[in-house]
Image (tube, rainbow, N blue to C red):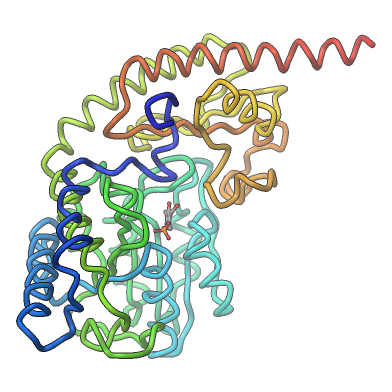
Length: 382
Ligand code: PLP
């Protein structure tokens, strides 16, 4: 299957790296001990978790003790926001274009949701208005999962430190790891969520990086693993594999940013030859991996159906929303008109994307749009 599809949905999940698969194998078939045990075999597993923690710490620029292994990015966001507000009380704040893993936490806590600008980045004036001494948690994503828009985290950090001095500043960096050096992001925030399956590791493992001294109420209670911050038997294979995936991502990042930027230029040039295609956000404000367009007189649902039929994997919005063709909450928050948001298409690229994938995607999208428009015109005439 994998060899036959043109995979343009890396923002939903990116294929595992061969080195990350190799790294996890010994722990699926060999070192199966529970790292919390007291025997020698358990210590072997624990040593591997500790080494993975040290490696990730060196790639993020944090202390090993600041890493809490979790089950996914969603859990990391929940722990950071719900956990902090349960511990400290106070108000949670986030922008309207956050991933639901953040937005639903803030809404659940009765917090403040602030406006974004036309590109989907947090509106700094609106954020300023929402900040005061009562705010205990502010969460702003580093990179938007639908449009790829990058947050100016330096500006957000300065604003939050000044106007909400009691707040823990969290960033959802789930979409950032492939494109942005996490060492540049980490000094600006108090906590950060990452998820292995977005950078070539396995699904079902992530991390919350949380600054020493910042406490939160654990949301998974039990045996007290991860220094009482996240109970549950460690996913040893997943953790070791995630560390390797992040190492490889970090090592290749500069090269990949340049390579994928060139591929996106080709992709967008090809798509812009189709009448009525509009780039949703300018290239200059987005990570290279995401090309989000809106296409006039086309419903995303029909388009995705035809792309799927031609073995091109793409998405209309975030993967979670693409089952139900509601207008995306991100595009709504950005103020994109219904006639454009109805034809939203996210093509996202990553470490396995080739020039041939881009060429084929342009051909298939062009043909699909033409087919939809021809059918609509015929229906109108009938
Ligand atoms: N945050 C962002 C920005 C995402 O893109 C995703 C996944 O789509 C998540 C959080 C959730 O991560 P996970 O799938 O690991 O729960």
